[in-house]
Image 1: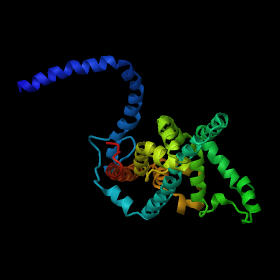
Image 2 (image 1 turned 60 degrees about the vertical axis):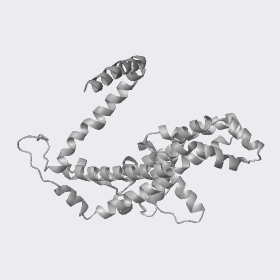
Image 3 (image 1 turned 135 degrees about the horizontal axis):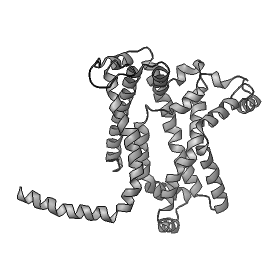
Image 4 (image 1 turned 135 degrees about the vertical axis):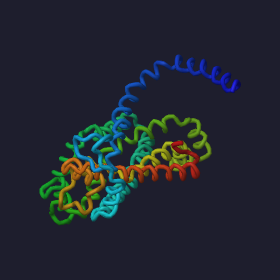
Length: 313
């Protein structure tokens, strides 16, 4: 016990010294930590209603609370729409994984090959701009473009395709959603990769050129290995969010005619929870998908750690 106490006494001055040296950094972190605590961790207290027959206005704990166990989870899993919701969520998130995850990497690699600095800056700025446009505005633009007399529809008609309202076409919805999501986010998503590429030692490229390596070989053997850690971490986060499709964009784009291919867990819980007031049921559905997402993240992290040596923990 005495030895443990002596070790604690030694660690305490070191801890105080570390805090004192980095007090400005910790103060800068405080607003972000406060926002995370208030909007991410504090609401987790409300997850208890997933195990209750909750009525708005009643307390979460105490007298009058009716506990129902796993009833709402069983109802969600055995529900008529469960298979459709999971299928649509995985399909739309899978498309985003294939295209939305790879496009920023490819764009950053191509951007790195541009030698004209003025043109490079123009392309970068143009690619970032869609990210700062409101999702509501983007969805409105897309709906007008794919309408019966929209810009995209007219272009496809010129190419020989039948004129129709693609906005209510279930077959066209996955492509519309994926293209819109990628177009809006790929430029901003490439910033991280561009910054990592710019930090790679230029001497490696000079040595490779002296050895006769062309641009493709430099990308394959220098640039991509330099991006490996970031790509691995981003992939883990993307896989963990497979059951969390871009609900906001889907809500703005889908219609009752496209529910069969567009209705995901997020939109389903929005309709039943916010619009119909089934709070316990939709909380259980959200908690279920969150647990599955954590399992995906854990599995992806283990696989990445074994294959590349990089992971979240």
